Length: 193
View 1 (tube, rainbow, N blue to C red):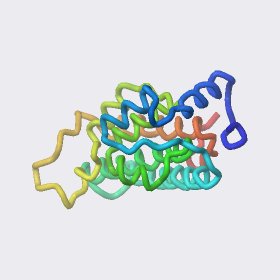
View 2: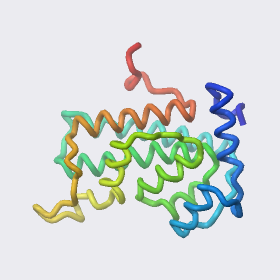
View 3: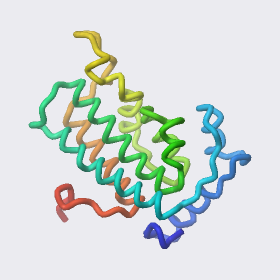
View 4: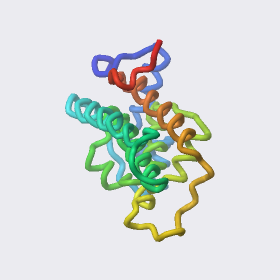
């Protein structure tokens, strides 16, 4: 397992191993989520193919971050829709890395970023930020922010977030995906030391 993702500490390696050892019949947090969401249980198997797809999703998440820039075109619903895309790409990077099949994610998670975070956190993602969790609830499912589904003045609740707050929260989430997966952060997003 460590040949696929660099471990930053023995504790993190043990946490990943424990989270990934869940079997479909286990009485675990992962099994509980399968029941809650009516999802077919799968055995998580890390592969080089999953690792490559994980990296591709991470790179796309970073690319989509440009749609959250202060000078990016679009209005508030466009911004939140793009935020949902970034979140889903980033979290699916982790899910694919730990062995969830892409077709399974498409079927049982779809555009529900709240499910992505739930499945990520029970598979050693370990992201515990109350404001990010609240934002993800506002976004889920993120299709609801697509302009095609909105009528003027009839927008879903945005939770009172501002664009700057969202940028900080999503930047932290994407950085955490980088840390957990071991994918290299692009130079354009690299945080100054």
